[in-house]
Image (cartoon, rainbow, N blue to C red; front, side):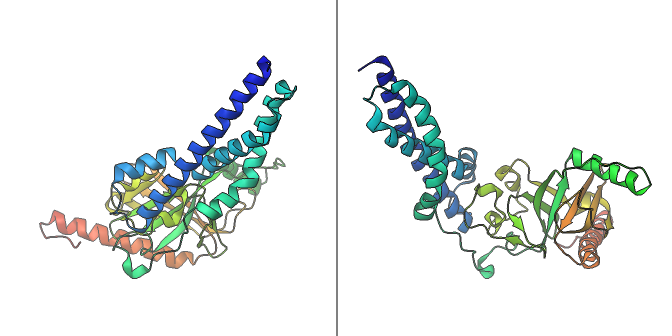
Length: 305
């Protein structure tokens, strides 16, 4: 056996061993998080965060399956005279095979994701609260929005502008807005479509169904999640004019901006077709209630819960 055959054999052994560890770890993390999703009291938050940090399940299964299949495919060729070419072949075969094999592994070993009954959810559980699907435009899209306004004013700009945004499921809780970043698809009615396979648990909107989204731990589950207390909002404004396609190429109903007392503004493009007047009224009602409670508190009268 030559040096290249020895190296190829070692490489294949590492692929197979690493694959088995990766697959096992990904499946275990997925089941722990699925158990927590159904009952947030069943797993300590520190354990949940640990599994989220290491868990991108699809990538874990992809790498694991790719390494496993690539290593197994390469084993018959280990003692051939083509060890040098084999190393490159194993790497390529592993990646390609991972894409092919990942879905069967998800189907056979991945947990199923039925929604919990609404009656079984806690009062501030995400699955019990009203919400809207909101997108936050990133900087290039904000610049594109400004460019479009110039176009409307008569300045021509023929350059194509690509949308760049993050999608959030914005829960309307009694004491605050709770925005959870998600990769889920939003339909034309503004409702989230349940995924058949989670790309990542903390990026699936139904991950929060049984969890109290007003808890401080909500922000620990995903570093891009955020909460805004109604009492910290000075005012809100609604623009019911849908964003043009070159700014936001998804169905949308315009935007809502929350102007905070700190001077910061959080603006969401409302995804899907929504009754913006009704949504604004619902949000303004929460804001007015918080303002009333604050006045009562300042007057020394206990505020409503």
